[in-house]
Image (tube, rainbow, N blue to C red; front, side):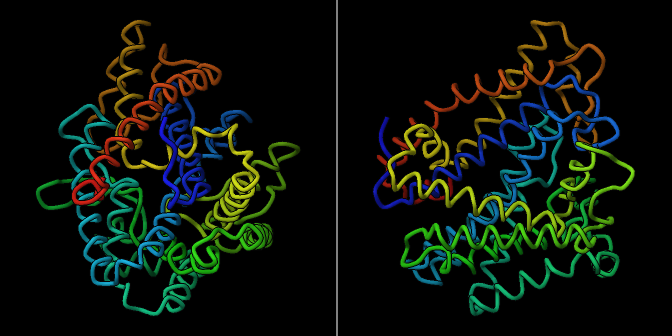
Length: 389
C-alpha cells in the first residue's frame, strides 16, 4: 500500500475514513437486515439495533462539516477559482445523484431521490455564491439558522411552498422532467452545517495544523449545549429530554433519539460535538504514531467519493447474490415508486450479527479498490476531471 501524501492531514483522512465505513454499516443494515422495524422506533427496537443506527448519525454531519473544512483548506487557489470549482463539483454531484446513484440504490433506471450527494452538491453551489461574504458573517448566518430553524419550521414551510422539500422540510417534490422525487436532504439546514465547517476551520486548524486542544474544547462545549438543549426541550421538533414514561435503558435511548430529517439543533450539537472529540483523538494518535491500529482509515478517507460510489454497488450486489442463494424475496432489492424499500418482507435477511459480518467482509473487499484508485489518481496528478471525483 502507498502511504497518504505528506501534504495531507492524516487525522482528517482518518476521520473521513471512519465516517464512510460507519455509513457503510448503516447501508449494509438496510440491505441485509431482517428487522421489520425502524431501529430508532423506541416502541419496537432493541439496544443493539438502536446504537447501530445511532452511531451512523455522525456520518452526514461529518460529510458536510468536513467538506466545509476542505473548502477552507483550498483557499490558496484564490476565491474565483475556488468558486468555479465549487460550482462545477456541485453540479456534477447533482447529476450523479440523479443518474448513477439512483441506479446504485434501487437497481432500477427509473428510481431516484435527492439524498446526501444532492445535498452536498447543492450546498457547494450555495457556498460558491456566498463565498465573498466575510467568514465571520457566514459563521453567524449558519449558526443563527440552526439555532432558530426548529422554532420557525412552520414559517419556513409556508415560505417555500411547493419547493419546501428542496429547501427545508424533507418530503416529495414534483419536478419537471423528473416527476415525484423524494427529498431527504433539504438544502438550507445541511448547507448551514457545511458553512460551519468552512467558517470554523481557521480556529480548529491553526496555521494549517490540527489543534487537538481546540477540538476537545469545542467538542465538550457542543455536547454540554446538547445536554442543556435536550433537557429543556429547545431545538427539536418534539419535546426533548428523558421520556418520563420510559425507565432504565429506554430512558437513555429517548434522551439520545434526536431528529435527523431535517437535522435539528440538538442533532447538530451532539453529532458535531462527538466528531470534534473523535478528530482530536485521531490527531493525538497520529502524533504519537499510535494510529497504526487504525491504519486502514486514511485509505478509505482519502477517496471518500470513490468509496461512496463503489460501496453502494458492492452492498446492493452482494445482497442480491445472498438473496438468490438463500431464497429470500428478491423483489425487495429492486425499488419502485417514490419511497425506498426499508421494511423487509417475511423470510428476508439476517440478524444483527450477520449484518456486522457482512459489513466487515464488504469493507475488506472495498479497501484494495480504494487503495488502487488512490494510486491511479495520484499517477494522473489529481487534477482536471479527477478533482471532481
